[in-house]
Each structure stands twice: as structure tokens, then as C-alpha cells.
View 1 (cartoon, rainbow, N blue to C red):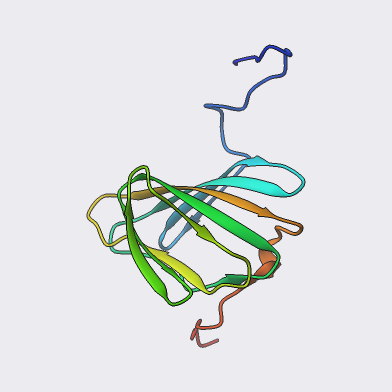
View 2 (view 1 turned 180 degrees about the vertical axis):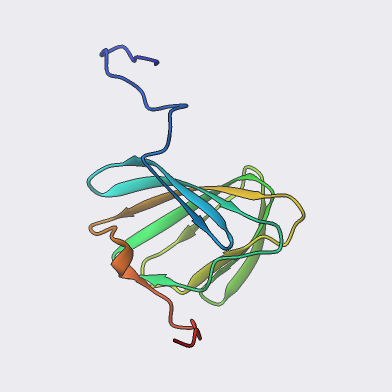
Length: 128
């Protein structure tokens, strides 16, 4: 385990604090603070996350590997390794992997409230 100059233990290269598998891939919580969290998101080829809105947080996405097709509001962009985008609060957004290799994103969430119950999926047409 690495230690910094203040003798605090680093969490780099350790198990994630939380991990969940989804139909589109997986998400791992790497670090969590009072007003931020850092996630590693892996999206399978030809899959994507459903459109969603968060009212109390923003998100920064940094592409680590693969290609991301990002829809944020009315804009659609393609991002590749070392590129990033910002998702403001209260903005409908989604990300897809149009490629043939896994898409890996580092997501930095920032806001006063980071709970999952702040996620609204207005275009989710799932029948119960």
C-alpha cells in the first residue's frame, strides 16, 4: 500500500469501494467525499446508458479507452481517449459505446447531493 508524505494511506490500485454490474457494463466507485465521487464506468461494445437527468450534481467524463457517443441536452459528440466533456445539473444526457472494444470512462460527480434517487430517467419506457 502506497503512502504519501503525510503518511496517509492511498487507495490507488485497491479494490473499489462499491461495484455493480449492469446490462450495459459495470460501475465501480473509486473514491467518495462530501460533495464529490469518482467512478470508473465500463460500457460494453454496442451498449449504452439510458437517458437521465440529475438535478443536484454535475458530471465530468474523461474517456480512458474506446469511443463514447455522448448526448448532452441537444448536442451529440464523439469522444475518444484523453478527451472529456461536462454534464451540467438538470441536463438530459446519455452515453453509448458505438465501438467494438469496451468504453472506459472516469466520471467525477460534483454537487451538494449525490444520491442515486436524484437520477430521473424521463424517457424510460419500461413496462412494469
